Each structure stands twice: as structure tokens, then as C-alpha cells.
Image (cartoon, rainbow, N blue to C red; front, side):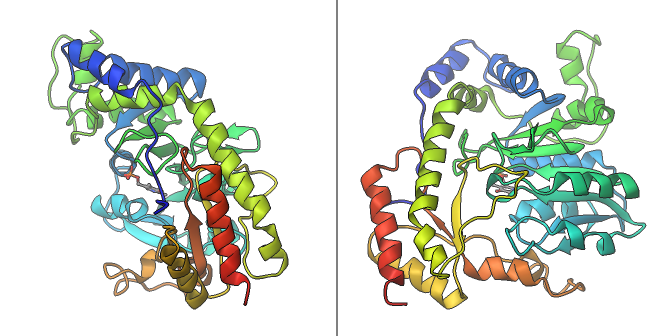
Length: 376
Ligand SMILES: *Cc1c(COP(=O)(O)O)cnc(C)c1O
């Protein structure tokens, strides 16, 4: 069986974990956490970062930082992972779902304005498959209506909007190091605070509502309960694993992008025959080798193709189901029909893409997609 994903170990993960263990401190915010923060703040130029135990946790921290009140609204795409919406609902907000655009699953920026009310606090965007949303338009909407702009950058490591790194544009960004992403630590995430206003409070929320981080820096002589918070920081074991991955970003990215490009070139004939649609990357965006997806002509054809691949030993998968139609949300949903979100729920398929996928395996996947469409 060719799996959909296989976590890649770059080589030093176990060595660094051993170092962390032997250092005598394996709780959070130790040497490896600081190395990771330093990487993101110096190499990537992010203003301030905090490692978290997941992207979900980073999104929850953002929700707390927004000081949400009953009735506050957050605009979120319907075609995304549960956490993009759940984090804000958990902290008292009302989620207003937006549609995707016809060219790719990213939020349709031209259809956001009518969703904005005097209760709207923030817009959360997802750079689906690491392909940038239209950030210039989003930035001007956020400025016009004084909204907080949040990038769910879970899939967007090493990607850009024009020359700006994704995750550096919104007031906040959240990354994921879940084993299905490009850079991994099993479970793991990163909160990026581009707007300095939130810096001080973020450290307190991160450390169970205390000012322990300032205490550890020697800025105060005792630490105490300052605000609400929770346990969002990962242990040094996770940070050590992640640091090994961060040292190998060019190697991981180059292999993943090669696999992506090969799929894209090999499948172009099927797009020319109008049987599938390959990913659309706008002129301002880039491919970061996170995910190779395409869309089929119908739900039946997509599911049929998944079965065809499976019976040939290949595990391909569909992706999100519109959140506004979920069991949890459908009875609360009062908005419009979200045509494109439903379209991607029905027609999108993702092919195996991981560092160790061999050329033979990839050729087999491509052949199998072709053999399915041969008679159609
Ligand atoms: C993976 C993912 C998440 C969740 O990340 P975790 O680290 O598992 O919490 C959130 N949003 C998007 C768009 C994702 O792809």
C-alpha cells in the first residue's frame, strides 16, 4: 500500500531529544524552545513567536487575546479544518462562514464585505495547500472596518504572498507541526504575534495565566496569577524534535516541491481533456509543496477514483466537509448557500505526497489516475 502520508525524520530528532533529557529540564521554554523561537524571529523575521502544543492551541490563544464578548462575530471560511472555527466558538464568539472562491479553496475576498457587521471583530483566512490568499484586499478590508486579521497558516510554512512571508502579514498567525504538515513534531504549533500590542499578554496566557516567563527572564522577583490562561507550551521533548526539522527545511522543501511539480506536469493532459482541474496558483502566490490536490467533475467521480486508487494499493483522500453543514453547526447556520465550499467538499482529492515517496511509487499513482479516466 502506498500511504497518503509518512512522517519524515531528518536525522537529529532522537539526538536532540536525548540532549534535552540529559540537560535535566524537559518541561517547556527551555533551550530547544528558545532555539525554535530564535529561528522564527531571526530567520523568518516574525516579530514574536511562541511554540504551542498545536495550531489549535495557537488559535485558542488568539481567541483569548481578542477579549471576545458575547455576540462578537468572527468571519471564517467554511472550507477549513474544524479548529479554525472551533477555537473562537469555544471562547464565546459567533462564527460567520464565508465561501471559497471558484479558482481555489481559499476564501473569496470579494464576498466578505457583506458579512461584516458592527459586531465583527476579526477575519480568519486559511492559505489552503500553502497557496496565499489575496492579502492586499484582506488588509484593506481589515483597515477599513478596523478588524483583526488572522492567518491560519497551518499549511503555509515556507510560502509567500508576493515577497511577504505567509504568517507575517496578519496581526496574528498560527502554524501547525502536526505529522501531516511539511515540518513536524508529531503534534505541535506556533503562535505568531505580528502586532506588538498583544505581546505581553500572550506570554501570560501561554503560562497558565502567570507571569512565569518574565520571572524566568529575571524581570520580576516572583511570579503569580495575572490573567486567564492555560497550559499551551510544549515540553522540550517536542521542541527538540522540531528543532531538528527546522535545520532541514531546504532539504524537505526541495523534495516536496519536486514531487508536487511532477504531479502537476504529468497530470496536465487530464486537465487539457477537461476531466480534472489542477491547483490554481494566483500570480501573487507560490507552491510550498504542502499538498497536491485536484478537483473532479462530480462527487461520484471523485469517490469512484478514490476507490479505484485504493483497490490498486494507493491511499488518496478527500478533504474538508463544509463546516456550516456539519452536525454541530447546521442547525445554527442562517447564512447563504456556500456553493464553492460545497464544491470542494464534493470534488477535491489529495494524492500521496511525502518526502520518502519514491519515483516508482509516484509513477504508479499517476498511471493509476490515468487508467481511471481512460474510458471516461
Ligand atoms: C492542520 C490544520 C489545523 C490544525 O492543526 P493542529 O496542529 O493539528 O491543531 C488547523 N487549520 C488548518 C487549516 C490545518 O490544516
